[in-house]
Amino acid sequence: MPDEVFPTLDSPRVEDSGDIFGFCNRLAWQVGGPVIIHDVEWNVVAYSTLPQNIDEPRRQAILRRKIPQDMWALPVTETIQWMLSHGNEVFEAPAIVADQTRRIVTPIYLGDTPVGLMWVAESAGELSPDAFTILESAAKQVAVFFGARTVVQRREESIFLGLFLDGNQDAEFLGQCLGIQPTDRMRVATVWHSDPKVLVDGLRDAHRDIDTEAWGLRVLCVARADRLHVLHIGGESTERLIQLSERHAQEILRREPDTYIAFGDVVRMSGVPDSRGDADRVMSYLCHHPDQHVGAIDQMRTGVTLMELAGHLGNYLDEAGGLSRLSRLEPADRHETIRTLDAYFAAMGTMSEAARLLHVHPNTLRYRLAKIADMLDVDLDDRETRLLLELELLWEGYRSH
Image 1: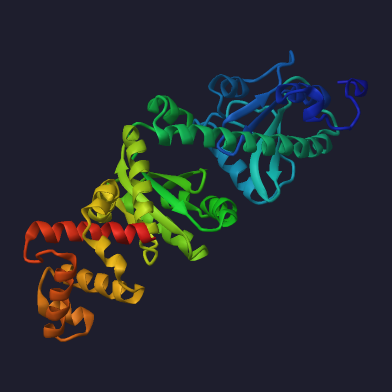
Image 2 (image 1 turned 180 degrees about the horizontal axis):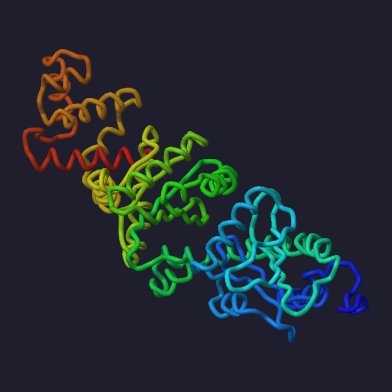
């Protein structure tokens, strides 16, 4: 091919061409051969469409939208993977069996992270003698495209994940958008931190930095108004997914000890909104029990249900009038009265155990309970009275937090 056919060495720019396919066309014209770009998972991102001769491997890649991983190409792709992990220089790919077309491969890096490869085939005549230099410069431009593409993908992923967690759209369609299979097991976690900056920046980055893929666990994360929702996907069994998701939680707590993490049940695709709802319920419970940083609905269902029951009955309990009579007491006396009733109910009415919890003599406790019963005008031997007082105490505890 005559030298004058080749343009200047200035690399084309993605923004000049208007789109990545236009960029590929300009680059193909410049180096003298068809161009194809794919990501690190071998998915085809773009390719040139100039009227240049193309070989069968390129044709198959375009048709499949993925670089072929057939046995005839396996040694080549394995070599490419090795070279990609050992540097970012332009190199010639080894020949493919039954196709001896020369190919130049250019790694594409975002910082120190490989994000894709750019191939040029010498199937339309001799490549430009400056092909290596042109491709090295072009790779920097393509890296910018991959960076913008990553931002867009994350934004779309957040939108799809939010809809998926809320159950507002077709779950199967959203699952496809997120790369989730109907047979996948999933578990939702709600994550909270008192510092919004730590929550949005620190914790979200930590979720992405922890290499859960190596464990066989995929993690998707979306920031909501005052919390993060995390979707854990994977595990060959329910038990295994529980282990992996809780391991992930411990990694988060190791980085940010003041974090609270609440889990829903393990579910299939249609149950994800319920798992998210259960995780939010557990988080509400943890907020009232700040000494516990991790909880799951299967472990805390009773406590969560009682908390919600007390909340629903709050107005009725206020009108019941039992503990309202304590308002006439001094704060210290009121606190001691509630503490005494709490210990009595925690011991299921056993005087010796309740006295041990309060560090007083059983006779002292009997005297205190008699005074409390008289002040509240209740019979502590009556089962329904005790039940109502326990609900009032529960509501009092949650309302005070």
